Length: 445
Image (tube, rainbow, N blue to C red):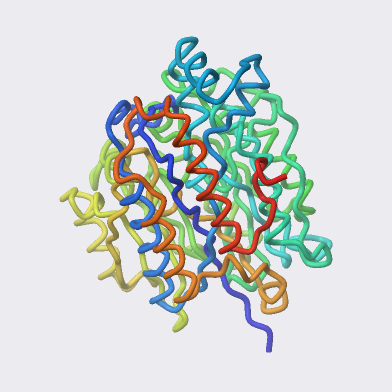
């Protein structure tokens, strides 16, 4: 009998993990800008998180980091000379430009793509659309490698369709699965896919005022068409502008879901009055709502604790667990809400696992940011590239690789070091051998 599971593919935090504060509206990122980061600790924290999910009986995948620094991006805009000269000239031109081409933000794999399982798609294939991420320059550099990587991992075109990113134009600004939640009675049954947007060209005045809205409704609609989703089982809803201005740059900072469970803050959506009915009606079953009110904790508490950037996972025995950052536990109001939630018999979440992902959190990404969710049946799972599925052996190899190549600390001054550029190419070349992804990176081709 065919079984269906949700597989989490986590972004392996890269060796250039640094605090540049490049994303307006991401309060954690901005508040830590210019600080000294700890790439080795960050990567080991991320690997420990992956192994925690494995220990709970879940299947776990790994997505490699991007090649950084991206000197090709600088050459594309007119910088010339050897590595040292290009780095120096870019820094003198604009220090944020130098920081952008060193960015390790592909670690947040929730922004890699939007994924629809085969049971939701008319052609019976798993559909993946890599996000163009054009709202921020440093992230817009990611989609060529992301697309190539996904096509290497999900290479069987009878079972998978990896689309090109949407047009590189603000009308189709797309931030990936961070603004997408799928609801279903179980992972293997037909679902209802909720797309969350911040900007709607039909109503541009209804958006945020302080920080930019990154996801457009036009992008959501395009993805639903590309994925061949049944329009009656697709729901579009808008982020609340007050939430965006409070630091909710993506929906996964204020809401999440798993199967029939919907965990969200009352100020998450501008159109929440009919939202629950819009989801439950085509699904044919009521949602299990876990709603946080302002009386429980504020938007500021939500952003500071990243409760909603936790993962809700279905365990092999059918129960659910919350995978939350330590910051959630450290906020008394939010922790009290979590304890009440897991003690309640009104929802299936009966355990919480608090994890240390502080290096990621300081740059604005929690447990859910670090993973891309892919629902797969047994046949599809057997067609996935096995080199990226985490095992004890692969975990040991990755830990040794991190210890060998990653700097303990990284400051802004070190981004001018051409020797570091060459050392990082050696590291990534070895990683592609470990993950069996030959010629993934531009320098290898």
